[in-house]
Length: 241
Image (tube, rainbow, N blue to C red; front, side, top):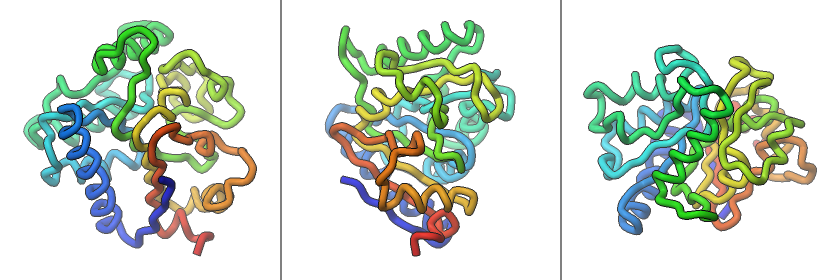
């Protein structure tokens, strides 16, 4: 399934996002006992945190991963995990720190990427050659069409072997990051883009619904056996009306 929804307000966006997350969580918990979700940072932290704080289904059965992460200490404002930790832990929800599968910044950048891939494989109980299948990846998009830390014309767009990769030359600071690669992203049961803001509108006009030419990393997100969903606010979708 490939669908997109245009919303008019933040409240409507949170309501739509909550409905989709709860549906995926309920189905996953019924099917295999836990909900394995990958989160993104930036403006998505506020929306996703609002949803999770509003009594989402089965929080004790969630395992939370990160679609990409800045290679910084969690105490720094650029840390995606740090942002979610401040928004969701310490009594704000029933989530606990052990439910978050996060990077180890005490390692070198490359070792950190390898270690995070190992942590994901272990969390999914994958044997040799098995590919983790996330129940849901919540993704954003930059004005340049990047998603996760996969940037236009970057060599990581061609990565087919590694599931998690390090990047030390991100055009968007901080330069050092850890990111999911396309093979892992496209194995998910659902990839859900949440895109807001007028700065994204020109790119959105070129990729939805036409998507004729592959110009942006976001266009390479095509779940092999899963759904691709888009939630856009009115500013991001202004050229589609």
